[in-house]
Image (spheres, rainbow over the protein chains, first blue to last red):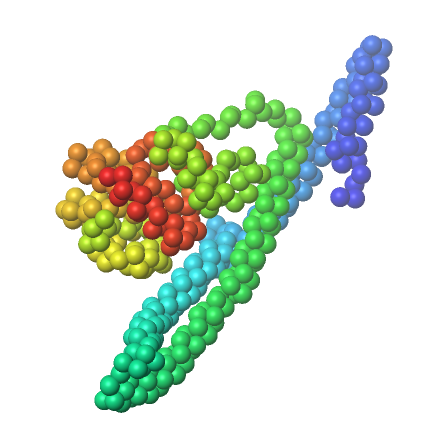
Length: 263
Length: 126
């Protein structure tokens, strides 16, 4: 863009200065000069238009490329694969990773529960026996039995607590997904921002095209709302306040709301 | 409350179904069955003689809200108690669910104590 005369601002300037001259020439009856001036305006407009279209085409191409879309099917071989489908794969990876972690955690908890309840049951039964011993209600053979049970209990306590600790460590390790999913989600956020920027560029470009071609749009058609009696589910409400949605902050508010409705 | 009652858990996420199933088991309910959305739930409900439904709202295929409306409109099923356990926390949604005849509404994330309380409350009223 070194040719200053073909910038839209310069074209506007030319248009302004030339029209004054044009009116003068017409008033003075110098029609040949007037026609020549018209020709000049027209040439400048065309030149400007061609340059602008060229510039817009290039910018459009850049913007679309920045979308990270897979365009190889339409514009020929491009070995770089689409960031958008890559992002979808990444998000599926997040789902798999969180699901695996949840399952590992629940498997380990399922293993721990009976260990903990065995320990508790055995301890409380031993405590009853122990109380009888303290009250001196125990016969010598019963005491020998208790003596053996105590030994077994201590041994099994040792084993079970070791297994419990191992499971607890594994539960902690299973939370390692947070780091991996965090990194992946952050990358996808960056991509979404890039795509948003490209879209904004496209909108700007479209308005440039309208300006130089002189296209006026009727008020863009209003988005028609689909009428449906079922509220659309949307999952956890994020940024509810910013979006002006009324949400409850927790179970207590749900209960209050329902009781106000006669529940 | 009959601890042997037959319960259908409807949620599209296997993890969530497992959590609800485990919590119900801890509360003494062992007769639980699972469906991954409304469309799979309906045939099970039609033939399964269920006593109670615990459903999510947001599911592909058929949502929990549509399942609720379907159950209330079906003469055979209309009295089946339904507890909704969902991440949907918009006031209009909770009101809509109440108007459609839900028996209880729990927002995720929730605790075992809340689940227990709501189930007890539902069966006290029946």
